View 1: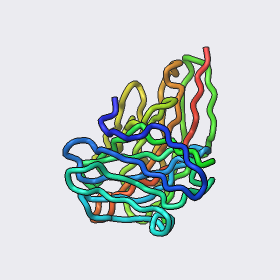
View 2 (view 1 turned 90 degrees about the vertical axis):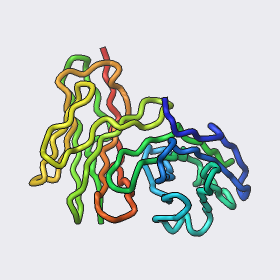
View 3 (view 1 turned 45 degrees about the horizontal axis):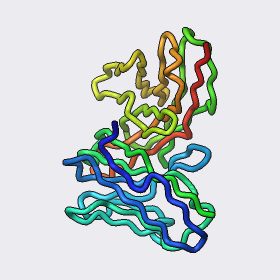
Length: 114
Length: 114
């Protein structure tokens, strides 16, 4: 069973609405990733953190997406204004370091934008 | 840029036959290669990871050999089982001082039938 906990499991939003999802990484893992898995099963990297610091993020994340990993709280990914094309499975993963360690994935939040 | 290519979108096999899923990569630096497996409605999980010392990783009957000369890390199993039906991703990641992002291929669906 996955030790990376993602909530909610399912999220349904209307276009233009905010959509927020959360992730609790595996205990002791300082590096957290967010990936989007689309309907074609393709993975798109969105953003990653080491502790509270952003390591890398793509342009899409910089504009409509916001993410944070505050200390002692779950990490979160929020879409400020949802679009139909955002409908996907959002996967959170954590690892021990940024140096080729295994990524441990959560079961994901499935977002549907109507 | 870095990329991972999985040539087959779908592989259908009869139980008991050998499995080979292709993976080739393009990378500026020498990366680590991974195979992740995702069963239906589950989180992706690590199946195999390449070693630095040319050992051949093996897990659950699967194995893969990193061939730097051909930039390949094909996944193989001598005899497919029904429970092997899943989505398989090849991925690469660097060891150096970078963000640690995992770059995925598009995935290969393996369907094993009786």
